[in-house]
Length: 145
Image (cartoon, rainbow, N blue to C red):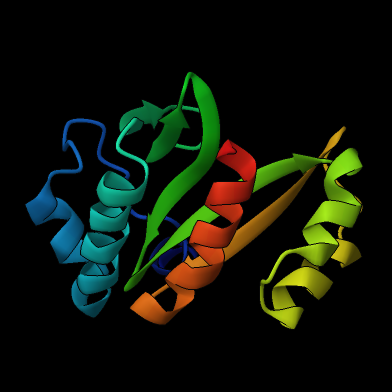
């Protein structure tokens, strides 16, 4: 049973043959699909030059979405059960600027607590409701600016 729970709790979109279409996303996101739709609509409105690039990654055995603007990867998106996660990677040089961004104190504290992966430190935001998109777009604007 633990393996089943691990699968249930991990990222979705594990079938390489099943492209993450709108229907597939709706099936996994459930009520969080409204937040996904708001995310993509705001991206299109505020950052029309940004693109969503879905690709199946064999090392993680799942589909991931790379959000690119001006040839720069701004963030990565993974689909989970009833939510999606955005992950932004920053260099250590960004620490002071991240500290000054108008993001939730919990997110800022989680970022500060990380030692980083190599030269990069991630910030991951789980989005199940539209309310979480404020921090996502604050970071998106900073990273892509």
